[in-house]
Every structure is written in structure tokens, then in C-alpha cells.
Amino acid sequence: MIPIKLEDLARITEGRVLRGDLSQLILSISTDSRTLQPGDLYVSLRGERFDGHDFIWEAVSRGAMGFLTSRSYAELSSGQKGVPGDESAAQSNISSTRSQKGDLAIIQVRDCLAALQALAREVRNRSSYRTIGLTGSTGKTSTKDFLKSILAKRFKVWATPKSYNNEVGLPLTILGADSQDEILIAELGMRGEGQIAQLCEILRPDMGIVTRIGPVHLETLGSEDRIARAEGELVEAIPETGLVVLNRDDRWFPSMADKARGRVVSYGMDSEAEVRATDIKLDAEARPSFQLVSGDRRTLVKLQVMGEHNVANALAAAALADELGVSMEEIKGGLQGAQLSDMRMEMVRVDGIRIINDAYNANPMSMKAALKTLSHMGKRARTIALLGDMLELGEKTVYYHREIGREVVEQKIDFLIAMGELSKYIYEAALEAGLEQKRALLVDSLEDAAKEIKKILSSGDVLLIKASRAIGLERVLERIA
Image 1 (tube, rainbow, N blue to C red):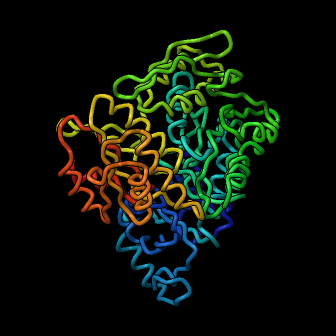
Image 2: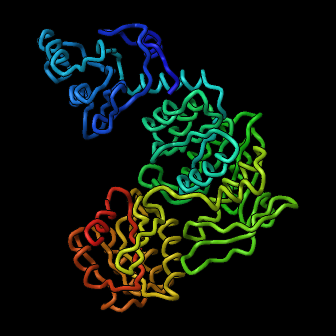
Image 3: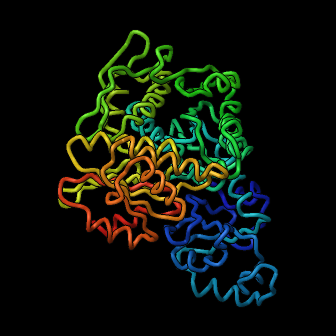
């Protein structure tokens, strides 16, 4: 993080310093008392299930240099907003939990999230790095991983850690960069219209990538048209001097290109794409190789990650890097050396069994892509798919789950285990499409899924694990590994 004085932080956040040295420098921020490092400033955010104010004293005991709060001394003492307490008790709490490294900094603000965002906005405005916004219905994190790997060949790069892509995560991404960084890559997620525009107001992106538009967050957005409008807010935020990288194979490409004020560069398999892939092949582990083509230049790329769908993600990263002057050899090296984030087509090997852990999230597009990868690996092995619920699909929930059931049969998967209330539709549709009853199971819990998988698996098998994030299907892997 770019250092900032306590006095300046209070001014930026329109806060009041209740305690602390105004000249003290803040060097890092944390919103999670569990992962807080000594010296961090703790920001007490409220969520749907937790209130960060409940963990202030834990953060202090772990070495926080101070905290941002929307409560008064008295409320901090009582532990509840709006409930009077004893100010001397709060002072006592500070004294009993404070380390010996100096005075504790306490800043009171109206709203801690708004304050965090204001701080990120100010830090972004002070920074000289170029910013890249990255959104889309699928492939955001993998594209980010490819892009970071490539650009690190030429620049000092900071990128969204984990999946910090929302109203809390983006500010933390910005605050995590330092004064030496030349490029910041930020994933931008959304659950509704207007949210990416709000994130862009903080980020002020110079460049942007939209991966692909598809059926996600239908529960709140209702249609792909509205999803496209929401994702297109990134395109609209790129200035005339900026760059927009779009997927030529996506049916929303024309309308996305029309929104752009900045220059548009396309990628994909389409022959008119400016950066494209030809001669795609998969090895026995479903790792793609392809000819990367840009103008009259071409090079053979062999990815170390699984899945043909990752070719498009690699192309998106290559297209933007090409525009920044990165050479084809550097792009090739970055793509071939890229490692994807955890639980994205992650290969785990246990007792001769290959397990594809793709449990971070799921939607109809990514589910089909994962099944296609599993099917390819099934040419030399028995394939088992453990599939869980896909969430936030609204009125089309049953339709899309049944579609995945048919896809299981289409891809000739040997064994299906469906877990969850919605996944019963995957199970039913697979049976209707011709999957034998003895090769399909419907289970209700992670424990049952793990128990049944242990009965089925044998050396040489390939197992796919995939569901929406909230299902926590990766915990099955913990039970069988």
C-alpha cells in the first residue's frame, strides 16, 4: 500500500480521530481479524452475517495499529451500536489489549465501507500505474492469471488477489498495490446493473477486457440482455484514449463494440479476430496447444492448464499484452508458465486417481466446459462427475440443470453423482437422456457424496468436482484425499 498519514486518512474518509498520532503512517489495511497482520489498520465492516465491530478487540490483540469504526467510545465499550456504555471501560479495553508499539489509532467515520472506498479512490488518484478492468460471465480469474503471468515479463504488476472483485474487494486490491507497480489488474464482479459502473468510478480503468456473456445472476438480472448491459458498464467506462478487448466469438460482440469510446481489439477463433487461435489440440491431460496468431506473426503455445475453454482466456490476455508492446515470445512464455488460481481446473492426484477440482464456482457455460474436458480425458480412463447446484439462475434454474444432465450423457461421462436440491434435475435429465440407473446417484450431503465416491473410485479414474461456490463441494475432496 502507498503509505498515508492518519491525519490524511481522517480527512479523506471525513472521519474524526478519537485517538492516535496524526503524523503516524498507515502502511496496510485489513478487513478480516482472522488474517490480520501486525501493523495493519483494521476496518470494521458490516456484512450480511457478521459485524466487524464484534472483532475489533481481537484485531487489536493480534497487533492492529488501530481501527476504523462507525461507533463511539461508549458504543465500543457496550459492543452494540446505539447502546450506551462506559467510556472508561473502552479505555481499559484498549490498555489491556494494546501492544507496546505505540498509541492505538482510532478513527470514527459515518460508514466504514464508504470510508474504505474513499480511501481506495484517493490512493488510485495518487497512483501512476495503468489500470486494467476485467469482467465477464465466466473466465475472469483465469484470464487475470494469464494476463498477470504475461505482463510480469515486462512490467511490475499487481493483480486482484483471490477473488477480490466486489465493493469490498476492489478497494482492497487497490490498497494492496505499492508505489513501484506499473500496472494494476482488477477483476470486476457484479450481481446487478450499476455495480460495475460504481467499481469503475473507483478504479478509473485505462483498459478493459470482457470475456464472455452468459446466464449468470439471472435471479437478480432476469435476462442475458440485462447481463450484457451490466457487464458493458466496463466498456463504457474506458476513455477515448483507452483500449477495450472483446471476444469476437461472443454473440454480444457487436453491441459491446458499439458501446466503446476507446479503441477495440478483438480476440477469438473467428477468422476476423485480430488475435486468434488456430490448430487447437488437446493432449492426454486435456491441456491445449495452439497457434497464436496476431497479424502476420504467429507462435506455437502449449498451455500447462486444462481445458479447451482456456484457449479463449489465454487469447484475451495475449491481445491486451500485444497492445502494450509485449513481444510474441514473452506472451508465449507468460501463457505457458501461467498457473491458475485454486479450484479452477486444478489437478489433484490421489492414489492413481486424477481429480479435477473446479469447485470454485459454476454456471451453465463453465459446467459444460468442464464436462467436455472430463470427456476428453475419458478416452483413456473411466470418468466420474460429481456435480452440485448452480445458483442464481432465477426462473430458468430447472431448465439449465436439466440441460447439464443431458450434457453428461452427450459427453459420455461414465458415472454421475449429483448432490443438492437443484441437482436432482441434473440427475433426472441424465436418466431420461439414457444414462443407466446403475451409473447415477443422487445424494443429499457432502458426507454422503464422499462415502459413495469412495465406493466407486479406483486407480486410473478421473473425477470432476464442480458446483457453485456456496455449495462448498471442494470439502468432498478433503474427505476422500
